[in-house]
Image 1 (cartoon, helix red, strand yellow):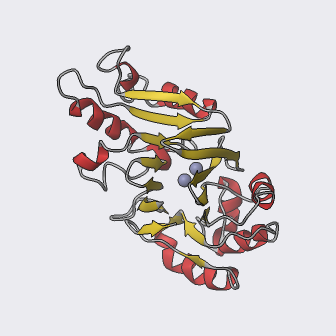
Image 2 (tube, rainbow, N blue to C red):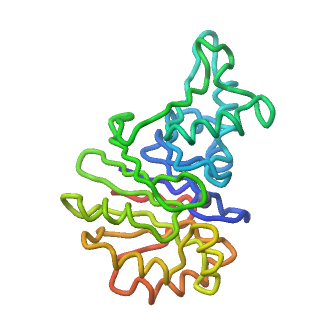
Length: 258
Ligand SMILES: [Zn+2]
Ligand SMILES: [Zn+2]
């Protein structure tokens, strides 16, 4: 798998897109940074978006991506964008985003029978474009799910956003072999641990404690969701917090191969 890091940060700053990983050019995990990083022609080659939760930093370019699909259809050929998520998340997208108030309901455009946007309720495990996807609940301020992606011989877990939690580590421990990689939330520096607890995120110190629950250690860890004003501070703190672990901090638009 080739994973392009369209957005790996939090807080808005030029060149620091919100969370979005693009797999092999056609499948996106979250949509924090699609239309502000990719040219139009590439945007409309993305067929599926899997959403971890509805916080705006994870869905903010979804309305514009739907619009790109709406204006890209020619003649009677409608390109369809499919959005996959757990039912509570799909309900929230319908009620609060594509509600004909904040943005048009693209699930009825150009027609109900043949819309440019389809919002799909998914269960725990499903297959899309040949990738096997599994949702695992995290501990955040709204319903949020880690996304396990398996394709041929490689697999990884996208864990964003979460505070201290249990289920995801139990899930990793019962897997037959170590994951090729995890992407893990480290939003705040250690000095803002109170904010991390309040908002359901991790600091380097909290992440270190969480990793004490893991026996089936992933081969590599990518630290993500760093608040952009604290990138340097968090990076320094991770050196000691993740001593002994294989990790890196991806930069916007990096392409990773698994
Ligand atoms: Zn969130
Ligand atoms: Zn977030």
